[in-house]
Structures are given as structure tokens and as C-alpha cells.
Image 1: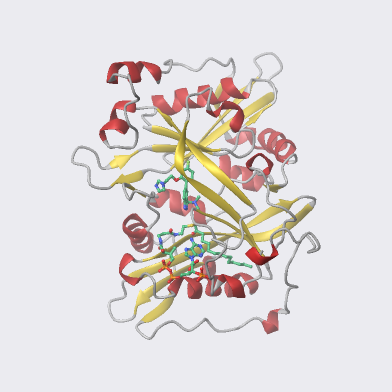
Image 2 (image 1 turned 135 degrees about the vertical axis):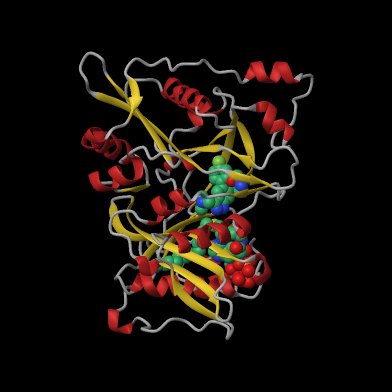
Length: 392
Ligand SMILES: CCCCCCCCCCCCCC(=O)CSCCNC(=O)CCNC(=O)[C@H](O)C(C)(C)COP(=O)(O)OP(=O)(O)OC[C@H]1O[C@@H](n2cnc3c(N)ncnc32)[C@H](O)[C@@H]1OP(=O)(O)O
Ligand SMILES: CN(C)Cc1n[nH]c2ccc(-c3ccc(F)cc3OCCn3ccnc3)cc12
């Protein structure tokens, strides 16, 4: 990736490959904010056939169009066997956190047919980088229809969302991608824990281990019916203040992490069926909330398999252990995920996840997830364990 030309990214206020190792460059914003009057007032030009549209994700019809565009054209794994299948209720959750801007839900339609052919989103987030809390946009769901690829549409989408974020007086952003761009602040490995090994082997997600039979494999991944931690229960609305305290204290230890308040915790971590699950440990003696774990629901479409069409996947979200060993807490998370019929439990090696991955029988995934900040330099790239941020 060092010899590759990044004709668009070389024009952007992001860490450039040529600057890697230059410790003379100060940490923090790369460009100063402009005045709001200096921000381009009108949208960027699209090729003639296309027009911008602001997507109201609350409209059932628009949400369906966004869902279908992503379901048919969004991220696939490296072997093109799976494609993310974000549900409509997941998209409404992901795109409407406290203080969201509808204008940051940006679509491109074909003028004649009104067909939605591209999408990009931002949501506001307070992100702490070392000791500085910065108002940022979290950018996600960048998608160009398969038939419109390699026409340099993505840079226009990116410039347009940048312009609309600038109009709200926000000058930084955070995003992740499976591709290498100028310049990752961290590179994470993802891991998978089989819950339904028979299905995973049938669809080619996993392979039968050497000298392993199917029945031996099923036994290897077997989990108890019930959780083992006393006081382990679903999070409820009245737990928001305690969970916020627990999470804020925990996230303080990381170099880059969200600065969640109670409203954020209520939105991002209160259980929502088929979207996000969260559990906590309430000490039976003191009724103190001592531990927390959560995962979100992101199925993948299985491409080209006769017997199965959907892979039901849980993704580790935010976990805090102060009394219950993290290993035990996460094993309870696996137990509830298995009980709710998930096929696989995925996790990045961020935060303290590395401490449980191997022991809980996670296997390494076949790719990496790179973390990026826009218009904010971090002195040196971070270890995954220095990251306290999970993007959807
Ligand atoms: C202050 C606020 C700031 C807000 C903005 C912050 C920045 C936010 C940045 C966005 C964060 C999104 C995060 C996110 O959503 C999570 S990452 C998931 C991205 N989406 C997918 O992978 C879905 C399937 N792929 C596609 O739809 C297309 O391939 C896309 C649209 C990805 C590229 O469409 P295309 O037809 O294949 O390509 P061209 O139009 O011809 O354009 C080629 C140029 O695009 C650069 N490219 C390729 N993939 C990229 C990616 N994932 N991020 C950024 N840039 C990406 C590429 O390096 C090249 O530039 P270069 O020549 O300089 O190398
Ligand atoms: C984060 N968010 C921005 C979506 C996103 N974009 N690009 C990605 C590349 C990898 C992962 C990822 C993150 C954690 C994980 F445990 C497995 C992953 O991908 C497995 C491979 N895969 C891709 C599609 N279907 C299966 C997410 C993403």
C-alpha cells in the first residue's frame, strides 16, 4: 500500500503514508476549522444522470430502499461467500442516536428511475483521543451499487458528507474499513467463535479440523444451557446510570474511546430485540452493578449455498469486568448467544478481548479491520488493546 497512488486520499487532511514515522508532526487536528460561511453551501456535482437525496430512515419505504441497496451491494468477505445483511431495525438504531442529523443520511438516485444507487452516512459522536474529547462524525454505510463501481463516485460521496458535517461545525470523523487507506490509526484482527459448527462447516465458513469428526467438533464447541455467574441478567432502563458510570470508568483507560453519557448509553446499550443485547452482573449481596457485556446482531447473507441463506452472527460490542473474570463473563455471553440461536459470535482484538479469545475457542478471521480518524493525527499507530471504540 506504500507504492499505491491515492489520488483522492492524498488531497484529504488525513495522515499520509509519506509522513509515517515523522514524529515532528503534532498530534491533533491536521487542518483548522473554517468559518461556516467558508463552507461550500451547495452540494458537490454528481454525474449528470444522478441526483442527491436526503434519506429519511424513519420512512418505511426509504428504509426498505436503503436496506435493499446494502443487502445487495454492501461489504462482502474476501472470498465473496458472505455479505452483510443489516436489518431495517438495525439501520434505524445505528442512524438515529441522540443528536443525529437527517441531512447526514445521504443517498444518490438515478434521476429518471429514482433508483437508489449509492449511500453514505454520518452520526454525531463525542470521541476522546487521549485527553481531548472531540465532537466527531462516525461515517458508515458507504455503498455504491455494484454496477457503478470504479467511476470515482466514492470520493464525491465522501466530500459531500464532509461538507454536510462541516455545516454542523464538526471537523473530525472516525471510520473503519477492511481496506488499507491513508492512514490507519490501528489495525485490528477479527475472531470467530463457532456456536453452530455443523452449519458453519456446511456453508464453508469453517472447515472440519484435521483428525476431527463432525461429532467431535460439535462436542468441542458445546456450551452449557444456562449462564454460571450469580446475578447475571439483562440490562434494563433503570440500570442506565450505573452502567454509564461503569462504562465511563472502564473506557478511560483507552487512547481512543467514546465519551458516552446516559443518553448515549440508553440508546446504544439498552437491549433492542434483534439489534443489540446487553447483560450485567448485579451483586446478589450488595446489588452493585459490577460487570457488563453486550453484543449486536448483524446477519450475513450466505452467497450461493443451497441449504442456508442467512448466517446469524453476534458481534461483541462493549464489555466491562470489575468483579467477574472477563473469561467467565464472555462465556456467559456465548451461552446466551447460543441459546438465542446465533451461528457464530464475532469479536475484534480491541480493548481486553485478546485475554479471552483463544481460551474461549475463538479462531482468527481471514481479514483485518483498520481504524481511521479524519483531520486528526495520532502520533504513532495504536495497538488494538489501546482502542476502546467499536463501530457498527
Ligand atoms: C469532518 C467529517 C469528515 C467525514 C468524512 C470522513 C472520511 C470517510 C471515508 C469513508 C468511510 C466509509 C466507512 C464505511 O462505510 C465502512 S467500510 C465499507 C465500505 N463499503 C463497502 O465496502 C461496500 C462495497 N463496496 C462499495 O460499495 C464500493 O467499492 C465503495 C463505495 C466502497 C468504493 O467505491 P468504488 O466504486 O469501488 O471506488 P471509486 O468510487 O472509483 O473510488 C475509489 C476511491 O475510493 C477509495 N475507497 C475505496 N473504498 C473506500 C472505503 N471503504 N472508505 C474510504 N475510501 C474508499 C479508494 O481508495 C479510492 O481513492 P484513492 O484513489 O484516493 O485511493
Ligand atoms: C465495522 N463496519 C464499518 C462494517 C465493516 N466494513 N468493512 C468491514 C470488514 C470487516 C468487518 C468485520 C468486523 C468484525 C468481525 F468480527 C468480522 C468482520 O468481517 C468479517 C468478514 N465479513 C465481511 C462481510 N461479511 C463478513 C466489518 C466491516
